[in-house]
Each structure stands twice: as C-alpha cells, then as structure tokens.
Length: 537
Image (cartoon, rainbow, N blue to C red; front, side, top):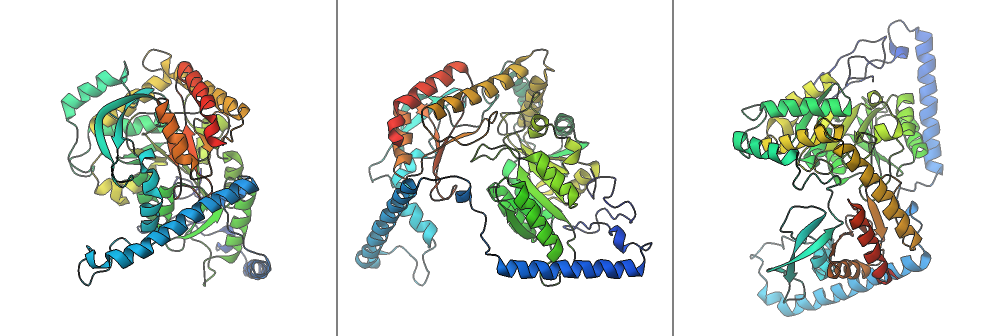
C-alpha cells in the first residue's frame, strides 16, 4: 500500500509530508514536477495536461450528461413501472386534495404559534402524513426477546387509521428473516455470553468517558489489536456506532481540494460523511469499474473546479456487500483502476466482514484481494458479531492520526466494555480460537442457506437481487400496495420480514430483505413464501 496512510509514499522521488494540517492530506509532488525534471519536459507536460482539459471540456459539452441511477441497473417491466407510478400518483393526488380542504376547514384551529411557520413543512412531511402513516405498522415492529432465529414480536393496534400505534401485551413468536444477526451471535452463545456477563460485572455497562479521558480500558486496546489481526492490517481504531464511523471519519480524511468518487448506491452514512467533508464529490454508476475509470480520467484531466489545479488527493469509496442490493463489490477491478490513477481505496465492509470468506474475513478473502491493496478498511460490529460499533483499519500512521483528529474518538463515549468483549469473543469463535469448529460451521451454514434460499425463490418466479454467497437477499415488490400486503401476510404466518421503501430506496424499487440461519428455518421460510407468493402477483 502506498500513500499518506502508509510509511511508503506513492512517489518515491519526492519528499513526503504525512499530515500537514487537520482535514487535509497532500499527495507528494509527482515526478514530472520534481527538481530533477528538465524545464522543457515540464513545459511539454503542462501542454499535454492543458490539451486534455480542453478536450474534456469540449467532450462534456457535446455529450448528454446522464446521472447514474439505480433504475438503469434493474430491468423494470413497463407495465410494472406504469402501475407503480399510477399508484403513487393516486396517493399523491388524494393527499393533496385532503390537505387542501384541511387548510380551509381547520385553519382557525391551527396549533402553530402565532407568527411562526409550521415546523414540519415540505414534501417529506407530506410523504409521512399521507403515504407512510398508511403502512407504518409494517415498519419498526418492537420485539420482546433476543434477535435469535425465532423471536417475540409485540402486537400493535390503531384506532385512528394508523396515525398512532399502541402496543399490546400480546406476543407473536415469529421466524426472524429481518435482522442482521448473520451468524447468530446476538443471541445467547455458550462461549461469548459467559464472558460478556463477567465483563459486565467487572467493568459496568459503560465507561462514562471518552477514549482520551478515562474511557480506554484494556479491553479496548485488546479489541483494536484483535480487529487489526482479523482484517490483516497493521492497526485499527474502534468507535461506539457504525454509522458514525463513516460520517465522522470522511470529514477528517478529506477536505477542500480533495475529490471523493462514490458508488451511486453507497450507504447514507457515506453520503453524509462525504457531504460534510467539503470535498468535491463525483458519483459513478453502481458497481461499474468502466464508468469509474471514465470519471477518474475526466476529473484528473479537469482538476479542481475553477482553478483546474491538481487534486490534493482522490479517494474511491465502495462497499463490500451493498445492503439494499446484496451484490458483491467488483473489488479486484476497482483496485486495479485506483492503482493506475493513484487514487486511494476506501472499503466499507459493514455487511461482508464476518459473513463471507473462508474464515469470515470479508470480500477481500472471498475475492482473493490482498488487504494491503486497500488503503482504508471500514466495518461494523452490528451484523456478524452481534454487538455494536464500527472500526477503521489501515496503516499505523493513519490510525495514529485519527486518534488525534477524529471527533468521534475525542468526544464520544467509548464503546461499552461488554460490547467490546462480545466482539472479541465472537471473533475468537469465528477463527476457531475457542477450541471448536463452530465458527467454520456457522460460515458454511449461512453460505449454503443463502444460496439455496435465493435459488428456490428464483425458481418460484420472484425477482431476487444479489450475488451468490451474499447473506442479503432483496425481493423486489415495486408497487406500494404490495408492501403492506406482503409484510402483514408474512406476520400472519409468523414470519417477520423487513420491507424497504422510499426514501430508503428509489420510488419504483420497493423491496423486502431476507436471510435465514438454519436449514429448518430455511425450508419453512421457502414453504411460507410459496404459500403467500400470490401477494406479489
């Protein structure tokens, strides 16, 4: 690995300044600008760069700019798209009609403070009131047990057309097809649970302090070393929340004059982190290395906006497994392109670490990629490890810098000691360091179940996204009427599923996400899905 996140610079002929100032990394001077380069070659190089910029500008003016869209990656039948648009249009029209008369009839009984505009205003508020509330019983269902293969779902009811939901004392024992508990560590485990209980007795539930004050225990240091060894990187830093790991790290690494090139379907935490960094953001079509290379070439030729100076640094951000699509990242091709154009690689393995690969080490192990070729590796502990928090793994210089510059490390309470122990213990089980082969069995089981379940659903005629070996299996629903119908019918059959709709997905691409952990649960889920399959048609 090369660059400011390692001890070796990308350009060995130029001096290397590691961290000149917060929020800014500078790439070393390229060879063609080094003192040993002749002035004539410098002028020739500048002419070539100028020609490329002018050519890129002319091409960009002639070419129709089509922004990357998830709709271009999923073939939606024309009739399905038409009926889905019609359904949303009908809901929108009736919602606007009701709002119009509500303003006329209820204007005198408004609860707004005099002189203040409504605090909730806009299309988001309209969507919540007129569309989401109709089916809100399908989302956020509370549970009353551990998120094991089977768990207890609290029943709810509404007396005001779903505007408010009230919990009851009734519980439904349901097959869990919705949580991220891929390997089952979130439930009681014969190796992990006793150690977590002992840690709770010794350290209490929280450190009540930040890492730089009194919030670092020997468990935190052990966890960081354990994670670094597991992902095969020199060092790692852990945080108490997975979402914050992305949204807080990116503004520290990138800043004005830097370029972020992001996959069009990256997670919201990456989107918000990139926006907060102040860097220039460009998007490439989902999982298309060819378009990534096109964007890189164009941006390198054009340089920074207005000034056209070279970028201080370029970072390409991708995910190992995309949580809404279940697709594996084309990591080998992307890394080859990043090396070619001297761009850093940021890999989010929230859904892949611990779930894929022979020993659970994620997409790098699955696809045969050397982790040294990935500059920054990010992951979370909320999926495969049954805990909470996230991590960043990379060079020792990178981790040392983050410990002195990242607000999530400096000002946030450290990860709970019992949660840290849960992660350490689950990693030991996965690697077989507990003296058993349960970890290997869990990995083989989730791979077999995922591939079998995906194959059976496709045989039944359902449109299932994702690649083989991926534990994420989205089933496309499309029409908004099918979201509550599918979810409620599954609940009647004692199956808990997760349905996902706008704004978490594009308007036309509503879906349900599923996953199973045991063979018996897998077979039961297939039988139930066959029984309620007519919900979709």
